[in-house]
Length: 331
Length: 292
Image (cartoon, rainbow over all chains, first blue to last red):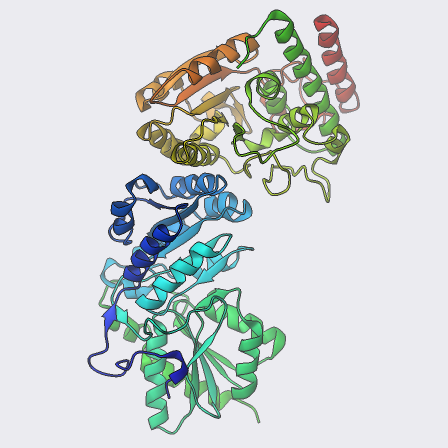
């Protein structure tokens, strides 16, 4: 059942489940961060409205820098602002930032220890009709590989706002991942967001497997858990909203209880959440794991739900992965 | 900036010569690193650290300091030598260049050594960072200046042109770009690898006030910086013509010395490797005597 302590939305499983974009949450969080802290500045590379920086730009025109279609420049200008005491947020599509400008991010922001927040939008195949060029499906992997970076992947619009605000208060580079399309709103304004904490969203007394989900895919994992319960299979679903630093102790404790893991993400199965969980468990608690995500392939244009089905990332695929991993458990 | 008299110019030239000797000694000890670029820029670094910059070596994080950003990080031996001579850190530390546990990384790292301003080495990123610093200074109503040194080779990076477009847009008259125009890069002469000329008209067409100087004429260079300081509503680019390897006879204008330290390999037109360090220091000592 849904964890009552988290004060989640009561409409999650209803046909009236609220749908909203995480980029909207980013825009609201950025605006609020700007109101709270005068050193917060925002930079855009010609995608101001699409990345929801426009409200900040309107409220604080003197603290908004339009860099044009130049993501490397945006990242390194932000680094210069940060070492001068500003708290810059740079926003673009994640395939371009931190994709196209990755080395600039590595050198001038991360290695340089510049207090820059990188907002990567249009992540995952859920970006849909734009096609694989605009669907960022490797961004977690390329950012995870860098030392000294915090990575947030908010599960919905409310959490996106909280993660954006939290990022503004962290000293050091932060990567935050957002999606284009409206996705299910699972949390409420009262749901806590604590950086680094893995929350149990669907709990059960004796889980047969733990589903580690990140981003909006948490919703599909919850749908799978509900379906599995009807089939008398009990699982636990947790929201990994901070991929780095990963709460290793929590991951191990959860798997100690369940003995099996399924990772669920809209990203390549290599190097993202699947990579993070499997590296952790291989070291601390070798465990059967199944991986839901893109299986070493690019996706294509299509509607989000069509793509999730075709690339075996929908609730049916998640439920099948759970059954498979339970069958792999040794006594 | 104070006025320059002949004595002061002579003093800056002597310091440039001292910096060149320190560069040779550092590279000989490190057995690794770049030679021609650092030697070429010694006059300009002497002018910056001992005349132009408003800075306090003992307070490298002071808010109001002028920022000197080195975009072409591979010439950092010249910066390290100038900083040590200015009192940022003990001169003995220069001998740790490129060695384990050193603050003097092979390419400069901001967090390792206070005063280097940016981490650099990957090319084409310094001007953008300087723009960020210049915008931040304008936002905060600060009057310090930002100087960015960039190489001609790194003008082949697209990021450099992205930055060249952005600075005039924001009318950053607190920003000055110094082009280290030494015409060499690893693969050969810059104009053969990728023509940059006519660079002066390129800068002007992008909206930069542009001044061309002999980068070894300290008075001319300081005058160009004064002109940049007096320019309003747009950034200034100073195209400084530089002789790579300046002061060491066998290195001057030879691109083979872009990425090699003296004393490691036999190079066409140079003394045998065992003689290279000695000849380089002897060349520089002769210049030192002429300056005294």
